[in-house]
Image: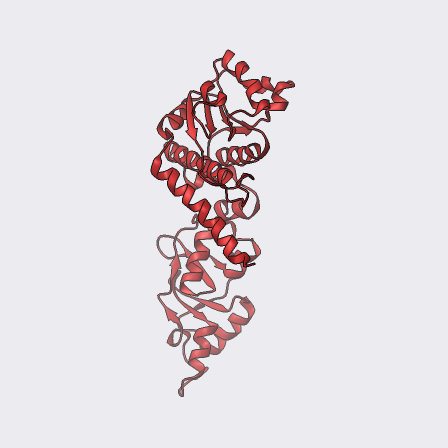
Length: 319
């Protein structure tokens, strides 16, 4: 049995259903986005079984991208948690059959309080769809399961529909990277979106020399600085950078001399960074793109502020 072929078939089956849904466009995304955007309270996502698990993910995605949202299990709602839904809230209810008993039980109570509802189900004449203000058709022609029973393709489509809803709302709110950072202050994602160059730069005991400094003295300064580089300063401005790479290349020249001036073999007019508020993740991209180890940070007039070494980025968990 070729499991690679089976996996390929599963992926293709689910991909085809996503493409079909996008072409047939059996949903009113405009109406859903407007309803949620105008909601003064929260968007409560609810569902049971696999739909509940998908709903939990959708609620988390919405909450992390600017839409106040949380997941509420229908059974818990029937046993007291229905009070968590306020008059200013809206509901996104998910049930592939549209007839999940636990979910259907809470619908009359939501209707009684005039809570606006978006439904995701496979048929527009299901009980859930009949209660909803907006209906999303998440029907699929075939589950990826070989028995065509286990929720596979249908859960993929439902999750993708939730992602589409979240992205549309991000566009509606003009949600920016800085907004995303404020929702993710911790972990590697938070570090990538929140930590700036100014948070990581070194400013003390930097290896500085003048352009007239002899190479032998610059090498001593390089060793003391432990950055693999020496910064060349002229009239308080950064004009050059001597790296260990520059030094190795110079050693290959027949006329190499330790008595030459450092500017003779250094990289003059090196790449400088004049934005200390740049995200550290963007600084890492510059380091990687130009294959350098050190970024020299300067102000508008090229006066030295500090340096950012690739090791500082790695130790801070910037990826």
